[in-house]
Image (cartoon, rainbow, N blue to C red):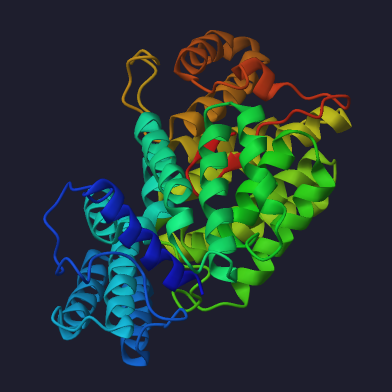
Length: 424
């Protein structure tokens, strides 16, 4: 099973390198217990720990207040303390690791990204998707590349030393390792490199969750719409059938957790329907994901701004293709999205501005500028916004003009990944 495979991978890594992947913070667990997910034949966490995790997550999210999240974290800290560091059996190790994943997810949802990273670093490989995802969200592209490369190289180097690498767990882990690297390459605009890593995702056993979504986004961004749609639907359906932190083959945290993947896959599916010209379906899907995002994060969360940007761009696409007008609708959506995304003043130079979710802000402002420029009395404002967006845009695959270009003949489209708020 996968958990057993990861433990053996981690032990081989320690033998090979003498160090862990990261050592930013002192470990909260003993050296033997802070390795990775582990256990003979993929042993899972204790039922009591899973119940406490479920309660903590539900309570924190019920009110979405600082107090409810603090209380949820307190429950998880108590749960962690009940898992003795002195016990080295597989169930205890798995329980401690999954509690830390849950803690990092709550910290992420509160916006405490660095604290979430600290928790993830304790469990290292088992949390690598979350670490890479958070660094992509924070636009720490070099760090995400280093982490993905290190995980990939670690897997390659120790394969020969691990006697269970003919099992299902090793195949699933291999697919996850390469798909994560493929996502990083896709963010960096390296399509050929990304494709080489996503080839492993064709293995049906491992093509679930984050893997299915990332591979689908690659296919989507390169015009293979029908295959992308299948993968989006697969990611949505399989995650719906699994309880958070309960499936050893789908363990992830923060922006790469099951709920995040489900929301992002639904958002990607809505974008895809829009790119196919199925605007009624696109509007229904994107409205649904907007509601669920508001329910999950709260109505004022930046992730809501990301989804609103997708909806606004869909209305823009529809208006262009149908030769209609939706300027008032688009402007309302862009203004609300930019407010939630906390876009900086236009007086701040785009290249120098410290902009969270820069891709989305630049894309929203670039499209909003078009709305303003067609209105004679607001053209100057639109030109100023357009200039800001162009200087802020850093996507390596498409220029801002290419990202906003709409043509029936074009199969190259931008895809917004709602997990990491990046335009691919």
